[in-house]
Image 1 (cartoon, one colour):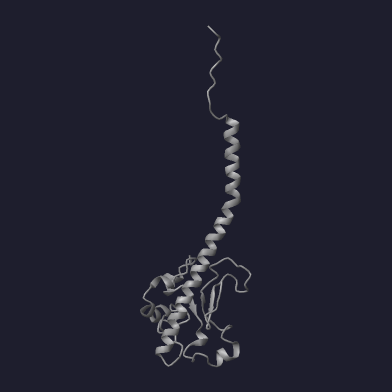
Image 2 (cartoon, one colour):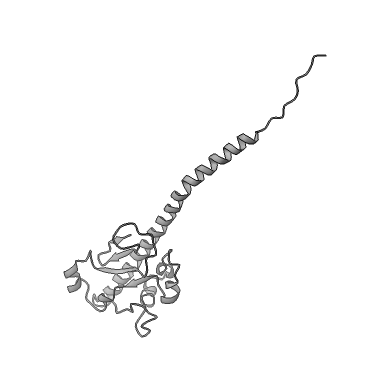
Length: 171
């Protein structure tokens, strides 16, 4: 009989397993911030889309009301006698989700009925009126986040998403 070679178990050594775990950990550390940034950017885009829908609702309201902007409360909890943005526009848009910014973790949606603040300087004024003539329609804000819900990306608005009366959105 010929001597037989010892049978070796086939498998990974502890060192090989630790190297693979270290590489996977390094890849996760590199990719996680990128994934979190893209999620934040997606929420910012959703917020901008909500503002576009609200802008559309305000414009539809104006078309039915002699091209005058509505008279809305700046903060409905502070001025309970004035109409809330949500109460005026929701029947037109029929989707309550557009009033909530995905980054609103401070409860403005629950307290005020919306995560977005109305520019009270437009109250009762005609569309394309003096205010827009002075500032320009691309510089007159219509709606914007109540607070700096989003990370500041250097757009000059400290983390707020804003829609102007011409429909231009700064995110």
